[in-house]
Image 1: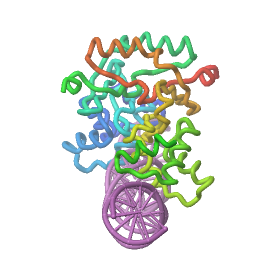
Image 2: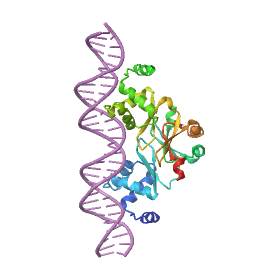
Image 3: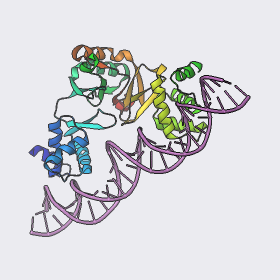
Image 4: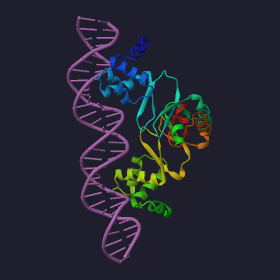
Length: 137
Length: 137
DNA sequence: TGCCACTTGCAAATAGCTTGCAGTACTTCA
DNA sequence: TGAAGTACTGCAAGCTATTTGCAAGTGGCA
């Protein structure tokens, strides 16, 4: 908490109640779109504006406290930076978001660097497909 | 060309000039957003409406002549179905879209199926990262 | 405690895409 | 070849998600 405030202040930024609420919501939700963060925050503080959510998510990301990934159709989803890196397995059928450890892709990442010099962050985007449940059907 | 028309007619669809232009543009452009397709089509036929582009891309995708992938921020990009079968390496720095063969990810795909029963189509979404050129800087 | 720049809430603007509707023009069938 | 039926098109309005401008509010250092 205190180190978070310092992190912000070192950059001339402030620790406001809204900012804390946004961070807490992201941590609690795991993966969340800005809209979901807003919904969560408003349960305790109904007055908070959506644009405040957007601006704070951006600010917190600049500071390195949260990260975003592209999961849904267009919308970014945010998660806490200190949450371990993992892949996002997004089911196109049911929309569920599963996790897989980084190691699953280690070989793949190595291939891309070796063959193309392309450095990938596989935690940053969704792996689309069909989850085990849905492919049974 | 003729088999394309049949493909459409079998489904009660029509081969219109606009539809042909859209298909041709997608083939020429390789990867293109709806907006880029429109721009390309309008060079020869300025009157074509954006919504026509969208509707035709959707129609052509239903018929199986084009496919889309999620590359940019939210926007889908389209490519001809018969040139599919490669990964899209999208550079977050310069925005360039590179290709890599499916085999690069074969191992990765196998991991996900084996460990999680998750069936992935790696051609359908972007692999974000930094391309060789940009990571030199 | 006071000041100042950072923040917030609000409303309006924007981007990207979709939808409703009326007129147009492919296709099929005589 | 012509007529009829229906898919298709262009236009305008609508939507969703996100951004921006601005005036009022407020942390935090001095």
